[in-house]
Image 1 (cartoon, rainbow, N blue to C red):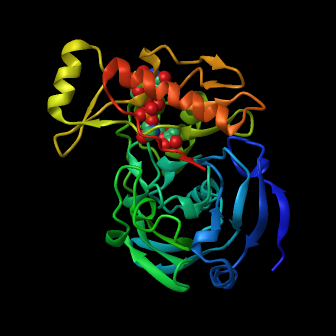
Image 2: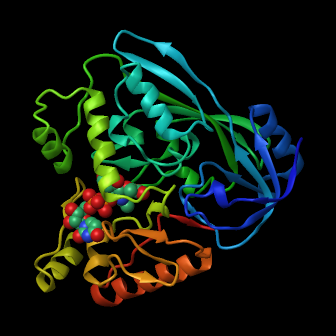
Length: 337
Ligand code: EPU
């Protein structure tokens, strides 16, 4: 095992926070993960993927395992579908581009999401009307607490809005090695429910979009709204969109009739956290080296040289002011380490 000491994590987290791992190891196979599990066990291990959903506030004293398990192969082929096996260390967007090149449908709306394949099921990534769970078949992982291999199907993953069993009961106890997605070979289920996709396609005069058209439009929308982590450090949406009971929502709307909302199938109401944050005056505001993005108040950014603690304090201030004004608690989507 080649272990690096005091390894910088600056280039390995999309916030671009400058901290080090006391011990750092690159895992390239399931065998590597088993070795790690045997030697260090779950309580002493920290698994790092694409670093796109974490805010590092200190150096990491645990043994850091960087998941670099690669590979894309067809696991099963049927008349209308393929099941594709992806290494958890593959870059998510490269997998989307691979699918589009091969005309496999289902993940085009999830174009340009930062991070690795292995993290996608953990927080059930979602954007523009599609969530990972819609195409998810199963995954393989190594338990770091019990040194054994396990597989999880869709039901076992207990997917929710930006949520799964890997964020609760199994938190910190596993490393995903492979993810299997079921993609369409023909009769692609084109999803243009999100307003900006419909209007962008109309502007281009596209009436029967291909999966490549959808991907191109999603890439353009994301580029126009969300900062590129290579230019401005960030982790996408910092908070989840809060979900309120109908009763609580009606009270809120009485006071703030212009509130933006989305009715959910279970009678609850989702409010865009970006709207709440903007209305509290935070949009585009810069405090020290951190702030919120000018085009999307839900995205906290590192304007250069910010410490993780600085970003965390900013998030707490935003959380506090939304709570005081709207009596709504914003739950963090990003993991603070
Ligand atoms: N809004 C504002 N001000 C802002 C930002 C948003 O008022 O500064 C309001 C607007 O009314 C806007 C609405 O919020 O129409 C929704 O904004 P947007 O379409 O940008 O989506 P979002 O709800 O803020 C969610 C996901 C994003 C995903 C987009 C598109 C969460 C936490 N975030 O954001 O996911 O790309 O929808 O589907 O659910 C991520 O998780 O990192 C992420 C980027």
